[in-house]
Structures are given as C-alpha cells and as structure tokens.
Image 1 (cartoon, rainbow, N blue to C red):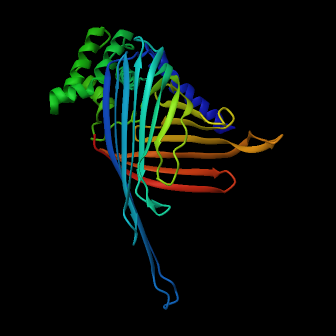
Image 2: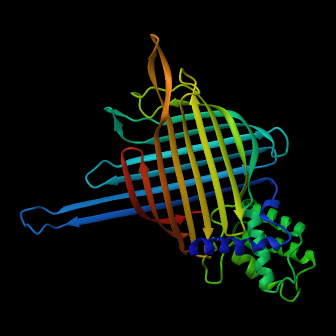
Image 3: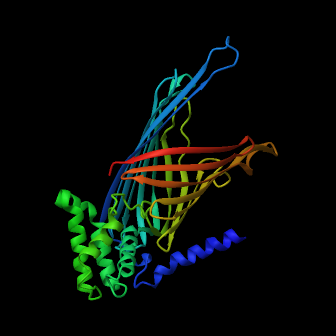
Length: 410
C-alpha cells in the first residue's frame, strides 16, 4: 500500500509543472518531420566441462545484431510514418539467419483539424527459415479505411517546458515564460532536422541562439544571466551536459490524444506458400496517449478484426496493449507494459440436418507483462535490463530476462 502512495505522490509532484503558463496538451499540429536510427546487439557464450573426463565439453554460443530506422512527417492535412527493423542472428554450428519488419502508415485529413481522415497502411515481415520443407517468404498486409481523431506528438513542447523550468530554477528568468513564447520555442525545437541540414556542424548553436532571442523578447529574462547561463541550460536539455553526456529525458516521445480507424485489412501473402491466404477482414484500430507531467507517459492501443466468411461477426481476433514510461532521472528510465491477445474460435454444429457456425468462448487468451530499466551510459550508448512474464493459454508459463546494449547513430 505504501508503494502505491509513493507512486501517486510522484505523479502529483511530477505534474506540478502544469503551474507553468502552458502544458503539453496545448501543443497543436505543426509541420514536422524527424528520423532516428540505432543498432543493438548481444553475444552469449558458455562452456560446460563434465567431471567425467570421457564426456566431451559442451560449448554453445549465439549472437544477434538488430538495426532500426524510423521516420515521420506531420502537418495539419497529412501524417505519415515508416519504420524498418532488420536483424542478423545465429547459433554455434547453425545457419545464419536474418529477418526484417517494415511498416508504413499514411493519413489524409479532410480538414486541417483532428476530425475525420482517410488512412492506408502497409506492413511486411520476413524471417529466413524453412517450414513444411519450403523456404518462407515475406508476409504482406494491407489496410485501408476511415478514421476519426488524432494523436499528437508533443515532444518539442515537453522539451520547451523543461527549458522553462531549468531557466527559472537558475534565475535566468524571473517567472515562467509566456505561452506564446513557449509555443515559439517548441516550433524551433521541432525544426531540428531543418537546422541540421542548413547549418551542418553549427546547427546546435543556431537553435540555441534562436531560442535565446525568443526568451529575450519575452521580457522575463535577466539580461546579465541570459547569455551564458541560459545557453548552458538550454543545451543541457536539448543536447549535452557539461560532462559530455547526452540528456535523454525525452528519448521516449510525449503523446496526447487518440484516434479510431475502421476499415478492411487483407493479408496478400502468408509466410509460407503452404499456408492459405485468409479472407479479407473488417478491422477496427484504436489508440490513446496522455502525458502526466514531464516525466510520465501512458499509452493504450486496441485492434480487433472479424473475417468476411461464414463466421463473420461470430469469430474474431483482438490485440491490446498498455505502456507506461517514467523518466526517473537524467540517466535512468523505467518502462513497463502489458500485451493481450484474444481469439474467439468457431465450430460447425449439425442442427436439424444443417451445419451451423457456432462461436465458442475464448479459445486463446495470451498475456505478456514486462518491465525494465534503460541506463544511458555515455554518448549514444545505452544499456537495457528487462524482465518479462508470459502466459500462453493452455500451454505454458514463461519467465525471461534480457540485457541489451544499444548504439544510437542519429
């Protein structure tokens, strides 16, 4: 019970930044784009030496290297994103394998608002391996439909709020910056990729310079301290601290709002030619996110579908997700999540000489609960520790842990 009290107390304290003149949910839809890429990898090796000298040693090893690239673009009228992950992995005395996962999503809004929109999505996955004596092939999925609402990435304004807080603590400003100034600073931060392309090696200095101009124009800055101390405080939030380590307070983005989409999904290719292609399905997709202060973020998602066949509306599949992110300090993040997969099956029952489709109760309900910490060691190097619990319906329970080192490219 005490742990719950401390948890809710931390939420209240972290939400106190809303005393500022602007909050994260005030951030509107900008013209924005960004991209990120990083590598992760691990190598495991073990050797077993039996006490019996006649038994040979047992040596095992395995490795895995993963790469990720993401990019997005938003404007009042458009929103699109794409992501690509690839991996090379293998075990001692086994074939080297590789895999990839690609996804892209495009939305066109009917008006410059958060109302109705048309949406299309494409995903493809592939893992090199054989099944049924045949090499697997890429899986291809398509989705198209209509939606309502919008989820906004408000990370730039979250960074501006942190800057505002740091400047006031350091007495660079006498009070919190006006709302207009904060929104202008957020727009500057959001244009980081534009600054990088235009100013090359000096883009960080140019961003800070333009932010300082906005602060000076607000009328709440101390002229004697706004130059050097202000520069340092802004730099510490956006780029690096005095010891050269990167500030990763906002590695996890800040989202607010949500949307719902209704459309038709179709799996064009299954992972193996021996597996038949399912019928198209009516699918609904929903998501919602909300930031709690500067240090907490919650996200929810739910997808469900029923196939256009004789079992339409009687059988369905669904996936749910919940995530919580907490920035414990400048160097440590705590992440937790829950995943749920449901499937309602059907069977053919003979009724009065006619086979009828009857839906059963949940034939499967798989659960996954995980939590872990991310430690930011040095520039572009992170260490992740995570534990997970999986319950696979009617088969097994599984506990697992993993350690992952990551190298951020940009």
